[in-house]
Image (cartoon, rainbow, N blue to C red; front, top):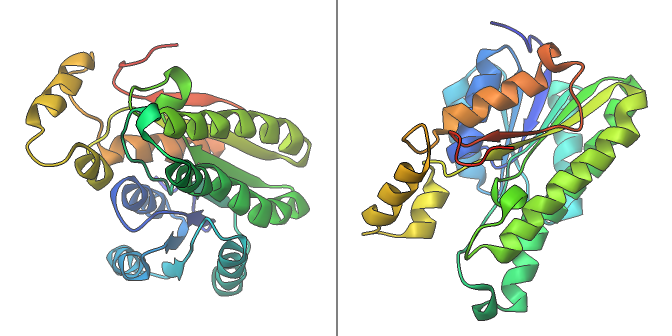
Length: 249
C-alpha cells in the first residue's frame, strides 16, 4: 500500500523503539520521512535504514527553539509537513510520594510540553494548506492510571484532553488530530523501566493481557499509519487503545 505516497511525515523520538517502527511503517506506505530525535546519531541510523530521501534532524522537544529550527530545516529539505507524529516520550517508575519536583518537571517537559511545541510549530502550515494529520502517542496510563506512574499518567492524560480540543479547533481547516494509546509494549524504554531480572513482572503483564503477549512496536505503527492516512479522513478527536485488550472502553 502507498496510502501516504509523497507526503512528508515528521516523527519525533524516531531513533528507536516505537518511533523507529512508525518511521519504517510510514516510509513503507510512501511517506517522505523526517526522522527526528534528541539522539542525532540514532536518527541518522534510522534514516539510513529507510533510504531514499529520509532526513534525520536533531530535536529536543522540550525546547521550542529546537523544535522550530527542526521544522524550518525539514520544510526546506522535504517540503511542507503533511503528517506530524508526536511519539517522543519518557518515564521513570516510582510511587508518587517518593518523587520530587525535578522528576515532575522533566516528565511534563518531555511528554506534554513536547507535544505542545510541535503542534504549535507545525499546525500553522497545516491550517494554511487546509490539510494535515496529527497523531499523538499517549498511553493507556493516561486513560486508566498506572501504579508508579502518577505524573506520567497525568501528562499522557493531558495529551488526550489537548488532542480532543485541538481536533475541534482545527477541524474547520480540514486537519485531523487523533491519539494512539499503547499498552505495555516491548521497547527499550520498557526494558529500562523494569530493569534486568524482572522476568516475573513481564510475565505478569503478559498474563494480564487477553491476547497473551506484550505489544510490539509494529502494532503501534500500524495504528498510527491508519490515522495518518485518508482511510481515517473522517476520524478526528478519537483515542485508540492498542493494548491487546488490557483496557477496554
